[in-house]
Image (tube, rainbow, N blue to C red; front, side, top):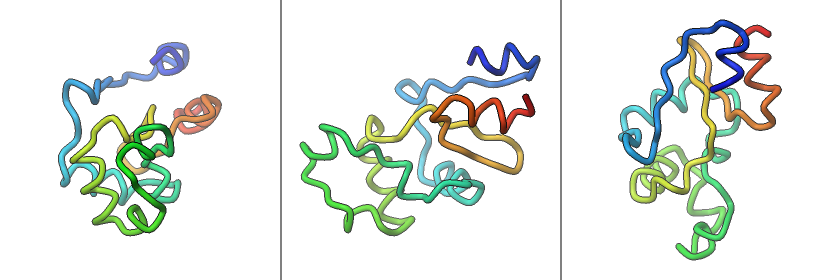
Length: 100
C-alpha cells in the first residue's frame, strides 16, 4: 500500500484472492471494525448475481458466511492494525488511521 510506504509504516499486505481470511479471521477483524460490519460486503454485480438482499447480511454470522463462501464480495481495501480495522475508502481514511 503506497500510503503506508509514504508514512514509513511497516505493513503486511494480504492479497485476499490468494489468501482469503477464514471465519475466525473475519470475526477478529469485525471485532476491531470501526465501520458497520455489513459494510464489509460489497453491493455490486456479484451481490445481485448471488441474489443477496440486505436481510442476508445483517448479522455477523451472515456476513462471515457470505464472505467465506464468496471471497470476491469482501469490501477492499481493508486496513487492520493491532486495535482497529477500517474499510480504506476513501483512501484518506487509511492515512488518518496510520497517523498521517
